[in-house]
Length: 189
Image (cartoon, rainbow, N blue to C red; front, side, top):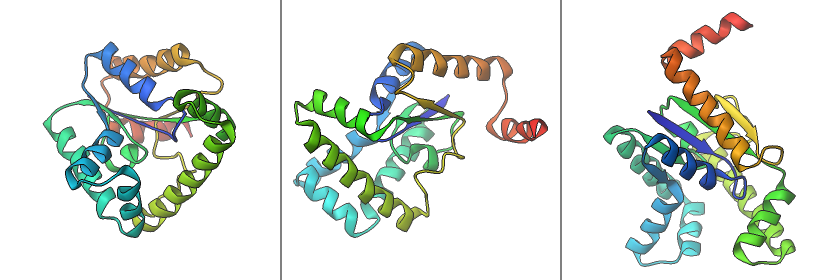
């Protein structure tokens, strides 16, 4: 089984991905770790690799290719902002949360001032939105590619995991493929 989990920083993607992987006995693949490994291999900082990514699509395409290769090798939980767009998956989950809530979470996690976290988050998201629109023609506010969108401001970690596991169990019980689910969903229109 392949499950993607996407969402902006601070929305809970890593928390959910780790919990789902443990609960389902699947491996966990984090696109951020792929990015960090690339920086280390190139002998540059994360910030420098981020600047390279802003100049052209090569860095993002390498991350996409690495995820696709890992997906071909077997199932797993794939966490990344574009994972739901670049991978064929049994279940695509998007986590959403208000920017201020996410900035508060990041500030606590990274021991930063809230104002700094808010400014950094806003800047990073604007940069990524421009990049993804330019290189992929993806509107990050369009959630139609996802099977499940969860507001992690409303649902805590346990609730988010329970909702996600319920979706997985429904898929397992129904045995429907992605294509079959898409075509059968039109019956509800």
